[in-house]
Length: 243
Image (cartoon, rainbow, N blue to C red; front, side):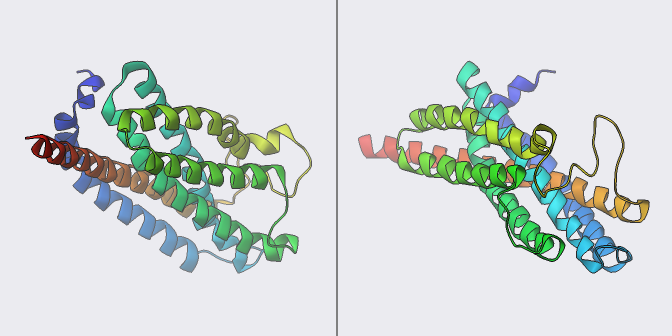
């Protein structure tokens, strides 16, 4: 069974109707479990006190802010190569979700950084690249809104997505590229399997991360379906106006 069949808007809508109920339930359950467990049933850290519990919002939101852009990059490349409209609409649908995740990560990062670093903000390589990624998100959405022809908008936003991916990579790996900076390294390095998070904090954190990932998928499925229906409506209205 080929995944390319879901490039057909009708088949994508049918798939979305099937998977969305499950995604909503699982995502809400995981997010609620991770946050409640993390905020109310884990101890204070011996160095950071109760401030450490911001990790349950900050890490999942930052992870999804970066991965949302990578998802948009993949969808944009599919559009540029294969001209599947669903992929372009999926990238468009993911952008506002990515913006919200980025804002959550920036705000919680400031709340976490002030008591730890003594400042709300520092022009740290990772923080700076993350802020630039946020501006690229805004520019991406503004470009979609500014261009009336949907195919031209998809082409230009795809190119912008390619350029912005540099800052998505820097946001993820800036600590590896530059030794200076206040921001710590990744708490759970995938490549090495090592982690700097104690078991008592690790389990609810993973649950929250899974929940944020499922929530992102649910929102993208839902918003992509909305974009497809909106484009259909515009096409019908334009056809009626010509007749």
